[in-house]
Length: 169
Image (cartoon, rainbow, N blue to C red; front, side):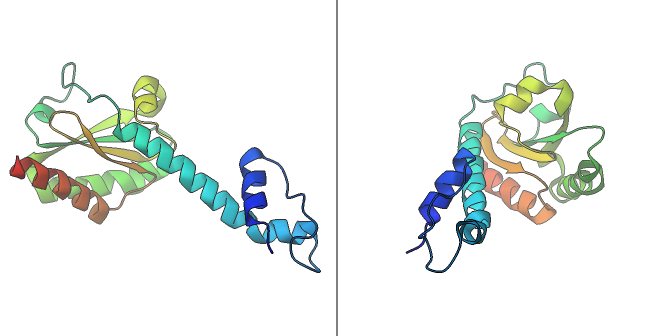
């Protein structure tokens, strides 16, 4: 019998596995090390899923006060969270977003959000890391949240899902 449950609980509470009898002939440290990566992954995944659910349930963002005039005309809006010192944001995420804009034209608008200067917006969408992107429809309802880099294909798939819903209604 192993102690995955104990290790998961230990990792989520910051403790250690207390069972010496977990795997016969294996020390507590070896047992803990064996399942530590699995447990951390499970805890991290569960936390991110909970944050994503909360972000998707956020009150729709109104277009009032939007500095991008084209945003009100587009069917899909993307908020791109970044910062001045985020290398991955500028070298990977911005070019991926530009390819999305090139592929979908005026149906999509991108608003860059300087996360350190927009803590309320970052809190609203539960931004955990940079870069992050939020995909919204024209009414400001959130359809997808990407924590970390989202490649062009993933963004295009998410944009197309929103466009398909718009064309159906």
